[in-house]
Length: 108
Image (tube, rainbow, N blue to C red; front, side):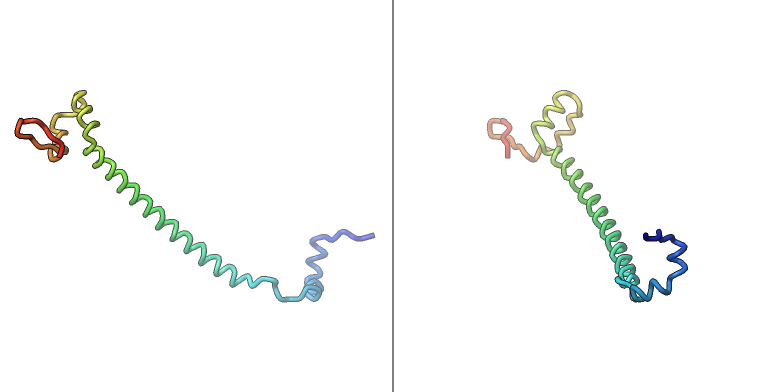
């Protein structure tokens, strides 16, 4: 019949346990902890850089879309026509047209 091992039994036999398994650890934990800490630090720095880059790209995208909306002739004409914007809003598209010899608008 085997006896149940308790924590107290293990604690009382530290030296004997070390003689059975050896005193050398299976893993060099100091080296693992140092490299793990370094890896975590580098990963955190990379995550911060990626978040900053994402925010910059997002701002640029929104800015580009706002500019593009200003050049969306059909949308702009419909918006001004429905009186949601003042006629000065058409200024951004004036360079896209010219007057022909018959005083008709032509798309450039």
